[in-house]
Length: 348
Ligand SMILES: Nc1ncnc2c1ncn2[C@@H]1O[C@H](COP(=O)(O)OP(=O)(O)O)[C@@H](O)[C@H]1O
Ligand SMILES: [Mg+2]
Image 1 (spheres, rainbow, N blue to C red):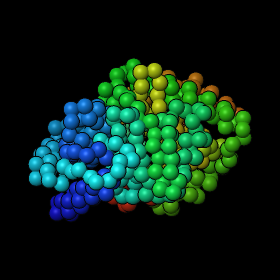
Image 2: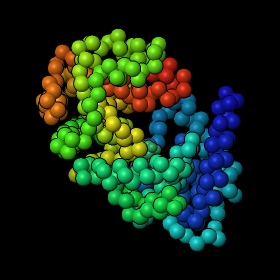
Image 3: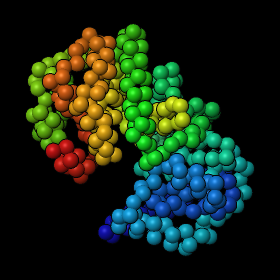
């Protein structure tokens, strides 16, 4: 409890420090914490409405949410003098909401009036990865446009999109999104195959990359039919974190964001990842139910055929486990032991 409190106090201090340090990018005036204490925004009606509409705010009436809300209200009262400022700096950007980067992540500053997002990268490699991935993928997937970049300061400005937040998606929106994902991915896989922009990997290599004795990989390997692991599969440069939180739904299209985990992965990774994460992260079984009711079989067959492979119905679950194994070697492996234990418990 005490460690949690200290962690929060440090986080709040860091947020305030960033707000002041980045004042040349922020409009002058009064700022407030949101009820999840994740970001600070300019206290006016338009900004409040847009912020609440767009950003991922944990809604709910659980104890945690109520406590956070109470804490945010108290912070907004007691920290008022620190949240109200007029900076002397010349403005470079007129932001009105800041999503501070914690744990070395990038900081995002939103300007709702001019529909722009300014991103400050703490890591030069991530900055270049963002630009290169944008250039690489933007022919195949709609990605917010990059308006401006500064290679010396690792800053860029991109288009701010007003999208329908995930909490408001209807059943038809979800259908629209998953169809868009299949269509865009198959189109992209075709292009990657035509350009021969892929590497081949034997399933046994995936096993080698798993830490021996790790409960997650042992569990997955015990479920996968050895015949499936005996396949040679193409590795394609894919999104790597394609879940609904990284899809922005607009009235007539879907935008794909957050390409920083892009890597060479098993060619069906993104397609299975969205099905799996909708259940695992968003607790919605709609996509996985559709998969088991064979609704995506013809699309998967098309994706497999691109590489001369056959989608086999009786390996339906095995493909999902292979995606998870690939996710382990690419991501879960680097998480601390508590996160890994939790993943294991939930997978089981
Ligand atoms: N161009 C954009 N327009 C509107 N909202 C955006 C844009 N880019 C990011 N966001 C919002 O910020 C959130 C975090 O951005 P994202 O790029 O996914 O970073 P990460 O998940 O790594 O923190 C997104 O879920 C989305 O709500
Ligand atoms: Mg994201």
